[in-house]
Image (cartoon, rainbow over all chains, first blue to last red; front, side):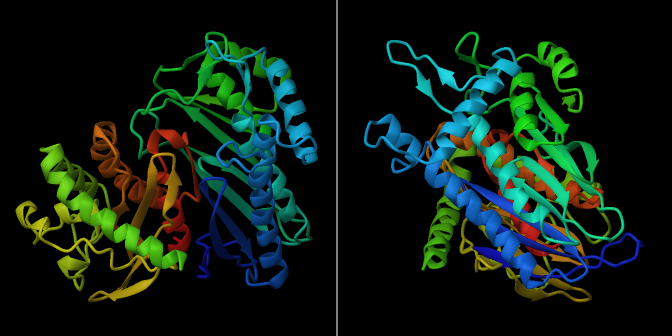
Length: 259
Length: 194
């Protein structure tokens, strides 16, 4: 675990002055960054809240990882156990809902040639997990937070009489020139998820054909819940026009940035 | 214990990287240098792109990984001779390097595990600006990796500067386009608290 504790006075002249603090930890095969702005970011309740965020993600990994053979999900699939954490059922239901909501542009079930259908909820689990983890910071008073987890970002603020929550600036990576920021999204509360082309072969499968999506570009979705921003970003990368239409019709509070 | 392992791994990777870079990518050095000069043009005075300006007090041997290929004073031909030890990879970050006017600090990002191996990025900060970023750990398992790394490393090193100049807090991207570099960069930025 790596913790940095360097309070920095923000450039914005708005009182009260908020200091910042960052935490970084490896969870779920990625680096998860938590940034907190508060008058006194060294407060123990903030530390405790952040630790609950990481604990939540570690728990999700133990239950739902498709990388570690001792996860509840894989032990269930391998027939080693009958009873698993309730999250497995929750996520299965969410995957069904996501498939329905996106008209099948998002799909967690994949049929492989000559093999039985495989259930792989990875595309949904990260967004769901980070959104759930962020709830631990929603109850910490008078803070603003942002969490970045491998390209998915959620920002929010705890309760409190303080002024309006500060704005976080989230850069959208330019898919044609990885390493540059194409657009910047400003958010006080909400989420940003991006789905894009793979340089190493397809990570995003077109569920209708079962083949990887190879077109260039990426799709970012901004909205209230990271889970659905993530699902819609995946759907929009598979079929931008169709997803844009569905999004406007079914989840109008989410905005699509196709790059 | 894990940090020691990480440190040893990163040192080994940096060494492997140093030797592989010249033999396998041919024009890699020039590509890096070109990217560096481009990035330097766009940054604040005193700032620099990909390792094109070394911190005054940083000895060449302290230059980890690929950055050494573009460090002035270290010609490409000699860079493979410099020890690739990532001197700054004490995982919690801040080995202080005091520059002439402003104190420069090096922050080493987390080694990010990817399905292809760990990647790690270190940045040097002086006067609130990123002056240098280098990749200290790169997965290096096959020809495809080499192609991707020679492409991704210089460009992603430019990102730190871009993101910094725009005052961005977080980066949203498709993680697999960059295989964890962005994540390690983010973590270095986290530590530096820019």
